[in-house]
Length: 473
Image (tube, rainbow, N blue to C red; front, side):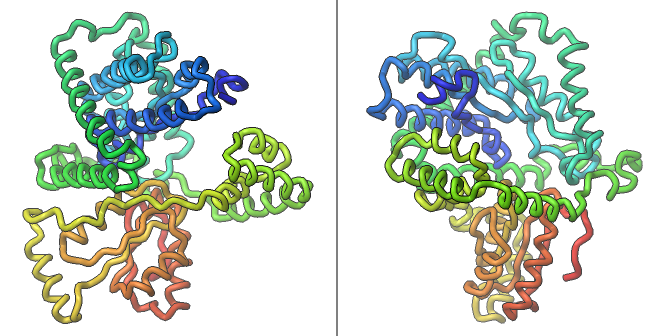
């Protein structure tokens, strides 16, 4: 209610289903998992005795969503129509919200990055356009805000011009076309109605399963949601590997003339001056040196006290920000009270593949295991503040299917934690999964700590988007 009363134009709760599709979710899973999360939030808010029941509709009206739009245009457009109808029905039937404005499905969208390809990356422009149109054409389910990736994000960090290219695409859709001038183009279409109905039915069935488990939190803590995502993404990748799912430039139509856009590969993406990191560290130290440290300590103490007592942490958080408390200090204060959650990774089940064309590799791993006296152990590490686990999960799953014993602890690991896990587990090989080349600098630290720990002879494999020059391993 603090935000509803004092920040009426700001949505304090944004349910993000974008990462679900990036992790491999089917449209039905994206619908159900996102809505289950929103239901979990609202159920807990409604149960809070401090909330006046008359104010609850305003709280519902302050929830927004951030979704993903993939390449299957008709399915994605119908998914957004299903989202709007499902949310309206849930708000009416579960929560008794009578005012239409509080039942409105308000969402922003970033179109799919999962489907962007490093091979023939110029094709990504067309993919991005089609995905953007899926959330624009249907007026009754149109996004309130759209953000688009750059054509070369599968290669690395986009340059300013690459970002401008995506912005121009949005501007052309908005100001040159007549897409925004008419009512909903799909109302009355039997094809669309049938697809929307099927998506809603599948989503309601999945919601019922989650409800039977005890809700979204229980489904997350049990590993159910993550396991489903990993399995769905594995099926998607196997379909691409087998050619069942065609990806132009990857497993079909792979012949190409040299691209003038990527002729100099190292110049086709943005590289960051290593000095930027040190400049940011220096600026942080200067900031801390010039603030009232006693006031900072007092503000952090007040924040912890509110968290411990269950009071509203917004007022002490605002006070802390005005004093000069950093985001890291604010988060550390809350971690000291609530702890730090490590989610299930979704890759711990038994081998999924019996027919993946891995028989030869599996036989070799079996021979190696006999030679070693145990199964070879593979550590998959995800260093740095990298929030994308999808590639690492698929590497871990594939290695497990090949016969490796896999150690994977999830994302955002420090080099020290990776090396410590390698020591404790006695691994035979370490794999580091890197996003956009932005964490290659941490490879040097991993290598240094491996040498210091006496395991410098353990092979270290680095993969992902790692175009910047790697240190010598």
